[in-house]
Length: 420
Image (cartoon, rainbow, N blue to C red):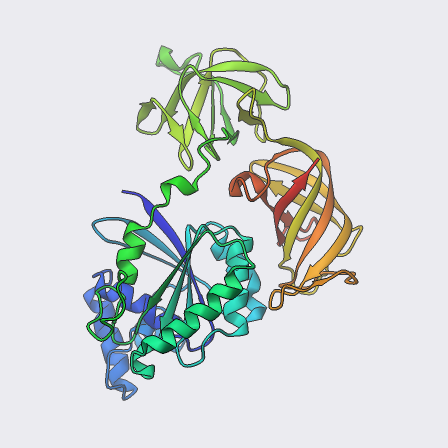
């Protein structure tokens, strides 16, 4: 059964918590004691209905009332698929949270209040989803019950958002009118909107095709760990030497010719092992151990690729950076540690080309620094070669994080735009 990772984003009071609560409740993904606690808290507050938003807002005052349910990442499953929800805050000061949640997402749900329409925040969330190359975008027009389930209102919002999205790189855009409070079009089709001919939100999440979103063309295998020969009583393991890691692109099979970077030497795959035994092929995001026919000097941070299809071997990077540090600014000449796949190096910020206004998409070329939650285009010089692809081609080999050398804290997330 495959896993769909999706991020949710919305402005304050757009009903995001209620929507997630409704998905968990209607897909039977919560326990009876959790539901009882939510019902009890709803009654204590004098609410006439069971307030499902308490399922995800349950880490604040509700914790004292017996509900302890984690926020941020939620897990649930239906017979068709498993789901991981990254619940990201909507405020501009939480841009870094959305970048973190959306960076691994297959799909993003942007909530819009049907009464308020497309806000600055809605546009910002859509831009960030497109910047992070989230392949599928769902615009959930919520609170349709408060506009009398008006088709005309839904079409207005769809038209306005579509014209904005045309400026972005959005591959797959779906619009669904919902009422998270009443459950309209969340898990089941709504009788209140006979004019809407599409599927419910959960049906869309269960059936959206994500297998082709992964890069199955460019073989990329960053080496994470070298498994050396053991002094084993079992003689089969005396000469075992394998290279463990997570496939970041392409399809690997025993017998395939591969190239090792940085040496440039070629060999063939002898076998592919997993925890459950050998397999005949491996693809992203599988974690496997490769064994080769030749004994090469391979260590953590190296890359396995195809001889005629290799990543850029680069020490000069052009990247979009989301700055995540509070109290420190990114400026030219800043020195940082860069972590890219399994390789770590030192990096110097050579230049800040522009700061991007995430609300208007305006490029401020006069900017001299990036502060917390700001995004800009930067040139980096790295002390040792990295094996990178453009982020638009491969999110795993095109993404990296920046770490402060003195505190060891993550201060930035980057997307490679160009490398040489």
